[in-house]
Length: 383
Ligand SMILES: Nc1nc2c(c(=O)[nH]1)N[C@H]1C(S)=C(S)[C@@H](COP(=O)(O)O)O[C@H]1N2
Ligand SMILES: [Mo]
Image (tube, rainbow, N blue to C red):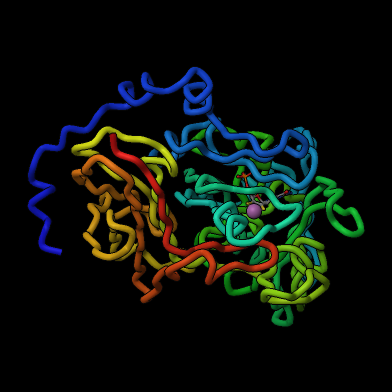
């Protein structure tokens, strides 16, 4: 501590172009790609570092996580059934949904439970899962109607404790192969900002992100924001879908995935990551700006972000972006002077609920590699 005067010096930061010019052709192509693709079919791709600093993610750079082929659902053909523990089942088209309920817009970050799995895989292998780096996270302005308004209109009954969502995309990885689905608890379903969204950043929701209509559950793992939603069922327990009962559950080390093994994941916990410089990269010695994001979940805000440039021995407060929307990430920066040589930079955030990040990825390793909210470190060389 006590080094805050550093931030009053005007830092000589090499601009983006200088850094790009010192890259090989291949590195430059990678660095400028709109998405880093992990898998083509089903399509899975993460937001690249040079786009992770945007508050609202550029169209085309929002990460994509899919378990089956992208279904092409015509917006004229799309139909939503609302049934189960309701007084009146509903059958609605897009026009019906839009004309019957008040529109509502929510800015929210979506984060896959597998974000930062790559660091867990470096601790111990996690077979059959994608090695997401820090980019399985993006932010958009979502417009639609409140799920609560639709459930109220159908007359959700007192016995209903959960609300389940069904989609048409067939996931062959599920056992048995089945369409994607999931559920959330009733309290969350009836809260202010859970949406049936048809628009992303004021444009029609792209097919790859669930268009014509998807669920958006701010503050919960991405898996609960079911894309191409076609059925909503009020029921007295969680969904029986593979992605609720088997996958997206926190297992203890040594546990094997199976029906109802472990704990289902819902709200995300406070986390942060360094976006630039990237791990194992070289920067110019002297002044540089470290950049990254921090985000919580379950309705908490980011309280503080601290950065260490000496591997975690000493910490300095990062500059936080102006308070952002309740469900959105907050970007941060720290200007620092780096001497030539190797440096380990670490970040840690706290949220308004008292949440802090575990010290090390090894402490949070779990068999499916979910929710790696450990402090994030990058190892860089200044030259
Ligand atoms: N129908 C359907 N919805 C889905 C998925 C899916 O495979 N099928 N993937 C889920 C997961 S795991 C995540 S992280 C988010 C990703 O949303 P995005 O592709 O728009 O980023 O969608 C969720 N909704
Ligand atoms: Mo996910």
